[in-house]
Length: 168
Image 1 (cartoon, rainbow, N blue to C red):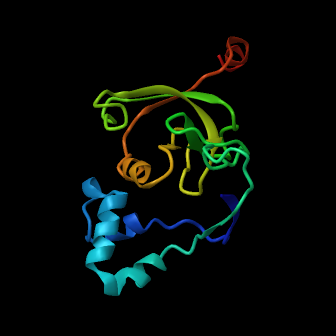
Image 2 (image 1 turned 180 degrees about the horizontal axis):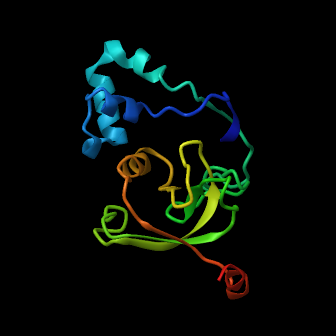
């Protein structure tokens, strides 16, 4: 599947709403805690979900390689652990970034996260020059990993020396 369209409304994070209402502590917010809260409060689910009127629509895309990742906004398959979603108004698809986070250890066997990644995707919640989302893969296990990534990181764009010299 790949992106097809969006509803056109601005993104409104339901996690932020739950924090503002005092339902979940800011330090505890994650995909998992939001899902748990929704499961524990079934009568409030519709009202909380309707807070975010930004919807993304997807479409099926024929693929010769069923093992390839989902198709990114850059029109190439995403690669788990190497593909990065960035603010498209600031960054160009295909640029390499070096991402390092001392506190993000659960993706690399308890070692600090440090690797080169490619900017291949985007998302309406990814706003700012040093903001990105790591594609952790497809399926439930990858979703569990992704849902707990909320870490400060060094976010460095890599440029050829000649291009970097123009900015010096």
